[in-house]
Length: 334
Image 1 (cartoon, rainbow, N blue to C red):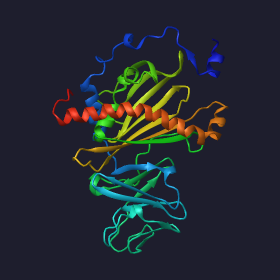
Image 2: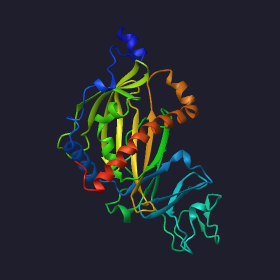
Image 3: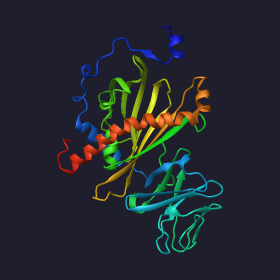
Image 4: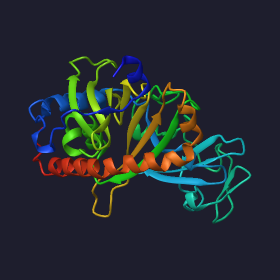
């Protein structure tokens, strides 16, 4: 195929597909110590006490969002100008669940006794700092995080709003945030554990001992389309803060696209086992002229993007949950 044609056509036809069981084993390269070191570096980086609580699109004006981050009950809503407000999820009067209360003219009104919250301090209710990056919603919980607070979260570099197509997938697993992050810092499992999505995976570079922000895993991988048709890319995995791993497409079709995996600790289950919300933001972009069609079709594409992420996370949450079980039993090999 001529170079000009390659630029026009992102698909490739695999010449000699390798059966799943005959692909190159990756267990020697996926050293537990290397993954553990990458996880340790991620955990040492500051978060500014910010936690992802959901998707921007899932909180329209007039609605409330309730979530318990760790042991902290949080309620979120928007005022009439669309600004995000967050604060304690229990009414300071008699403890009513504010997530069940209505929003009237941008004001949250407690449905037990009518205490009105406009986002400012009132009657012992103090707001939490909040941030809406256009794709995800964040809350800052200083008492829980225990770090030096920052004015805003460390939002990864993304395509500009309006230039890409974004979708957000959410799921809950019985594990801790570090198990989700460790899963993402193990790119070697991709073609073995997710053969329906990834083939021909090679990790070409791994992080060194640097504690800076520029270390990461560089991965050559092909996304499976159908049969022998694939889309090869070069992807880079980094962990900018303790509860986030970002995959950037650095070369190939969709260069500049990102997949952000955020892990938010939740209240434990009835048996006291930890629970973690996985909130994954997918922001696809392309410099192809035809991508404008994809942007126009975004409402139809988002369910497909979420379904694709959901298939991967059904497997990856099992991976994370198994990792937590082994750690809880003192049997984890790392």
